[in-house]
Amino acid sequence: MKHTRFFSMFSSKFYYLLIALTLFVSISFTSQSSNTTAGDQPIIGRWDITVQMGDQSVPSWLEVKLSGLTTLVGYFVAESGSARPISKVNVSDGKITFSIPPQWDNADKDMVFEGTIENDKLKGVITSSSGNKHSFVGERAPLLKRNTTPEWGTPIALFDGRNLDAWHPQKSNNQWVVENGILRSPKPGTNLITNQKFDDFKLHIEFRYPEEGNTGIYLRGRYEVQIEDSKGKEPSSVYLGGVYGFLTPNENVAKSPGEWQTYDITLIGRRVTIEANGKIVICDQIIPGITGGAIDSKEGEPGPIMLQGDHQPADYRNIIITPAK
Image (cartoon, rainbow, N blue to C red; front, side, top):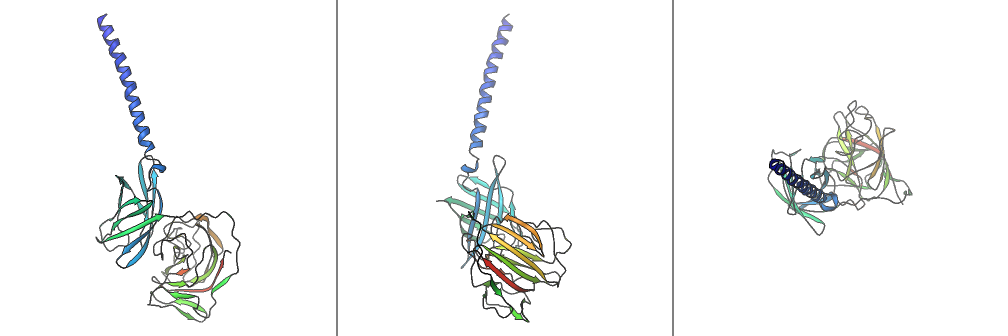
C-alpha cells in the first residue's frame, strides 16, 4: 500500500514536471520563432550597394532572405560576374557577416562581407579574395512598381547607320566604329553608352557575333541581357536571351554565328519581357537586381542603354528605343 501511494505521488509529480517542461519548450520555440520573422530581421531584403575601391566607386548588390525559421541565405553580385549564392548569412549582436568563394577572381580565398545597419543604411567592409579591404554603403533597393500601364512615346533611332552622335564610349580606349551602316566593335575595348537616359521603354536591336561570341546589352546600364554563341544548348541565364545570372529564357532560340538576330525588349519598372528572334523567351518577369558590370547601383534612377565592349566582337544595326511618356 505504501509502495502504491509512493508511485502514485511520483507519477503525479512527474506528470506536472512533464507539463511544465513542455510549456517551457513551447514558449522558448515560440520566442525563437518570433525573433526570426522577416519583420524582426532588418537585413532581410534587397540592397543596392556602392563599394569604394581606391578612387573608384563600383556597384554591388545583395539579397538576404529567410530559409525555414532561423537560417538566413541570399545572393550577392560584385562589380563583375553573376549573382552568387550565399549559403548562410550570420547575424550576431547587430553584425552581419558572410563569406563566398571566388568566381572570376584571380585568387583562391573566400570573399568576406562584414556590415552593420545604421539608420536603415548598410555599412561595412568587404575583404576581397585577394585580401584587399574596401568600404561600402548600401541602401534598400526600390520596388519599382508601376501603378498604371505606360503610354509609349515617339520611337527614337539610337543608331540609324550613319554615326555615333547618340553615344559615347565609357573609357578612352574606344574601338567602336561605323562601317557600311553597321555599328561594330571589332575587338575588345570599352563599353558604348547612350547619351540619353531612359526609365521605362521598348527596345528593338539587331545584332550578330562571330563563333564563340560573348557580349551583352545593359538595360538602364544595370541589367545585362546576354548575347552569346549558344545555339543548341539548354537554356540558361548566361546564354542568349537570359538576364545574366538571374532570369533563364524558356527556350534557347540562338541562331548560328554570323547570322543577324533580334531582341525586342520591354522594361517596365523591374518587369522585363524579352522577345528573341521572334519568340517571347522571358515574359513579364521581375529582375531582382543589378548584374555584374553595371554602371551603378542607383536602381531608382533612369539609365542609358549600354553595349558591352570589353568581351568579344559584335555588330549592331537598327537600334530603336520607344520610351514611356
